[in-house]
Length: 436
View 1 (cartoon, rainbow, N blue to C red):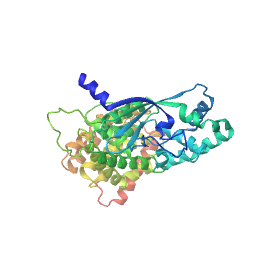
View 2: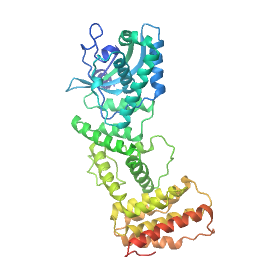
View 3: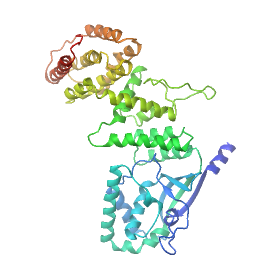
């Protein structure tokens, strides 16, 4: 325990700083002169700048109305990078960027390292632009704030926790814990922070964080495929659960993060290299990012297939999309094993088995449907098959054993004809189609 406490004392520094000191602004003479060395920067694993209007206005009103000599504005966490003169913001980016925008509005001669930060995300750039407008408008309507710039710089205080641990482990831990209690990060933000902890080479960590962020940004663009949610949140997550006959709650917090965290190991026994099987144990760090790259490439190929496009064309309405996502997930498992060979037949077979739950029930709920999909054991059938013929023959036998006792009407009938359109459409484009 003593050794642990010694490490914490060595790797963590706690101090209270004024805003001027933190932003490297000398407010005794000219604002452009700098006499401190925090040199703040925003690391790759941070979420984008995204403060909403109400948060910006609340901060500005607090600054205008405070009457005490000192105004404490909470805690921030910084990571001191050992090989360069830089402190990276682990927690507190939203407040510090907003305060910097305010200071720039009050005096455009102010210089601070945060003004040199650039945001690649269009969303972040839009937030910066809009919040600059809000701040300018607020300052015009509340001219008293223009006379409080020195007070703001000197008397706004923040409790600063500085982490000097060179391997970033404590920084990522604090980042994950601190933000899990504030504005929610996505599972993918936390997954990135979790796996970056295992990478000891800063250049590798920055490179992989940048690659991950580009995927995240693409997924968030309007009209784009949400690759991370669809691949990790739906396909791989469900397949991994079905493979082990495990149920889950769709409302569980951080369920995707927990599923794709690094698996436990015995320290004395090294882990072997990944095989890129969807259900393999997850290794921490670079292994996870390689795992992700592999399946992202497969996913991008899969969504270009006629089978995927036909499913999304005809089963996207009503609650049909519940069935569509389950059929897609299972078909993706087949695609990972056998590629596009007999992919149409696999879709028809999988879809027919899964659709039986729709035909046999007047009402369906997602939990029961997910359990039905697991009980079909299709994912295990695919895993055990050494050739498409074994899987297709087994799925054909399963179809023969299914019987629908209820006459189709309403939603069930509409679903039946939508799925029939998929069959006909794919059969028409595949001259060698083997009919079930």
